[in-house]
Length: 294
Image (cartoon, rainbow, N blue to C red; front, side, top):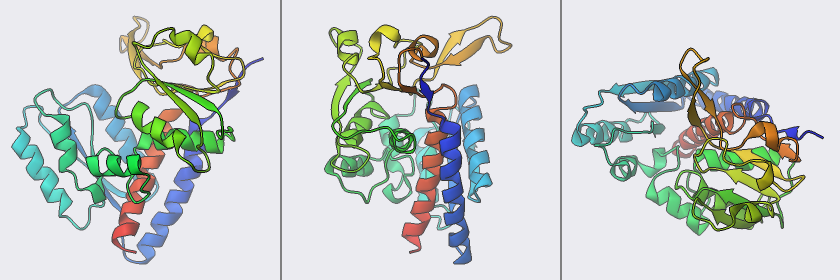
C-alpha cells in the first residue's frame, strides 16, 4: 500500500487564493503590500529561488522587486541598504536570500532587518516571541508551512509523537517549538534528533510524524519509518547526475521511493514543503502591511 501524497503545490494554491483576497482588500484601502528581496552574489540556486518567489508574489498582487548586490559587497554597504528599506513606507517585507557570502555574518545581517518587516521570521525578536508563545511575531516560513501541510492534509497532531531530524535554527528548532505549543494543530510530544543522536533509527521508528531536516541526501529510508507514519521532507540537496544537463539533481532528506511504501502520508520533494514556504512568506508580507495599516 502506497502512502497518501501531501501535495504542497495544491495546498499552497489554496493559501495563495486567500492571500490574493487579502491583497485586494488592502488595495481597496489604498495600501499595496510591498516585498523586497535582497540577493548578494550570483549563486545559481539563489537566483532561481528568488525568481520563483518574486513570480508568486506578483501573481497574488504583491509589489515585489529584487535588490541584487555584488558578492564583494562590504557589510556596511549591505546594512545601509537594509536601513533604507526599513524606513521605506512602501516596503512591508524584507527577505535576505541565503546563503550570504562567507564574509557577511548572517546574525548581524538578519538582525538589521526591522522585526516589523522580518517576514522570514529570522530576527531575534521574532524568534524570541516564538519561544515565549507571543503570537504578535512573524513565524519562520518553512516551519509554519509544515504546520499548514499537517492542517490541510488533516493529519492528527494532538498527543502524537513528532520526531524532527535536524536541529537547525531555520527549521528544526522553531518547528519543535511550534509542534509542542498548546494549540490546535500542535500539542505534539516532540523529540529533536540530529546527526549525533544514538540509535537514530530506533528513535525515528517511534514517530507518528517524522520530519527530515538534516541536510543529507536520501538519509531517511524505510527502516527509519514506523508503518503508517506521516513523513515530511524538508531537505534540498544536490547530488551528481551526469545524465542531467546541469550535472546534478535535487533530492530531499527522505528516500521517497522506499519510504512511500511504508508511510501513511508523505510530502513529495519537490512539490511538498517548498511551495508552502513561499505561500507563508507572502502571507506574512500581507500581514505586515495589514499591521502597519489596520
